[in-house]
Amino acid sequence: MNSLIKAENLSVRHGDTVVLSGVDFAIRKGEIVTVVGPNGSGKSTLIRALIGLEAAATGRVTRSPGLAIGYVPQKLHIDAGLPLTVRRFLSLPRRVCDAAAEAALTRTGVPGLGTRPLARLSGGQFQRVLLARALLTRPDILILDEPTQGLDQPGTAAFYHLIEEVRAETGAAVLMVSHDLHVVMAASDRVVCLNGHICCEGAPKVVSAAPEYRALFGLGTGGAFALYRHMHDHDHEADEGHGHDPSAPHAAHPHPLHGPNCTHDHV
Ligand SMILES: Nc1ncnc2c1ncn2[C@@H]1O[C@H](COP(=O)(O)OP(=O)(O)OP(=O)(O)O)[C@@H](O)[C@H]1O
Image 1 (tube, protein in one colour):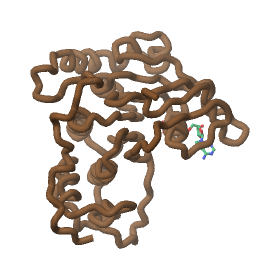
Image 2: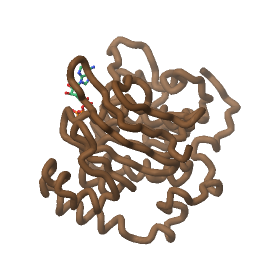
Image 3: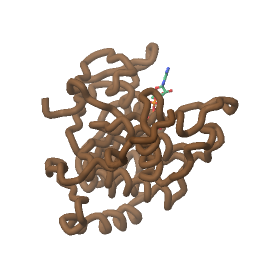
Image 4: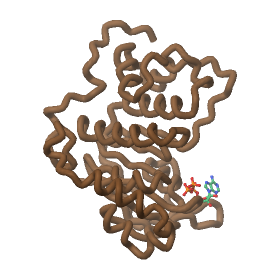
């Protein structure tokens, strides 16, 4: 199977309500795919169904055998009284060594946060810690449901750059849900526009021009999109390992989190 995850004619119900119907979707190694759509259009439901957290009412979802998924959910409520440090959280559910934990925090822009209580982080710090934890699973695919919530604008842009770097370095696929339309268009290989079913899908340029997309989102982000698209149109061959060809070999790039020597393990 070439796809890491594939949905065929997928429908999902919540009670009597059909939330998703007739969805055909596939993601392959190294692709960055973003799902966009209005509130309540079924984006999180699709993500959860692809992971296996929601049952299909009809159709089916297939995941490649042994697939490692790094999942950052849309919501994760942490009890304010929970005595859990960032460092311990990074070792859930699978224990990681101190060096790998710190490397992951550094990679996601929050070095040195290990001793902080998880419940006391800012929204942006928390999102970065969630990403660090997802990266520590050495995922074949990162699945991020609105990962930039709580991040300011520079933080959001930096986050998407980081995602692209991770993809280039590890070859992991990335499936995201996002409302940051203009940045999404720059950062994705493919965009899926959802509204209970797939309205349109394809390369960002194609989707942004599609009447179905424009009917949902209008042209309000057109100017910003044009700017980001321009910035993204340059040749990445010159960019030291940030090429966008998902089929390109990644072996020359060590996994960013495999480097540290795990000799001091305190958890
Ligand atoms: N556990 C649930 N039980 C019943 N209905 C649900 C449940 N989860 C979601 N829904 C409903 O399913 C629909 C799709 O929800 P979903 O969270 O997938 O939308 P979304 O596109 O991710 O929205 P948002 O952009 O607001 O996060 C909504 O109408 C929502 O109210």
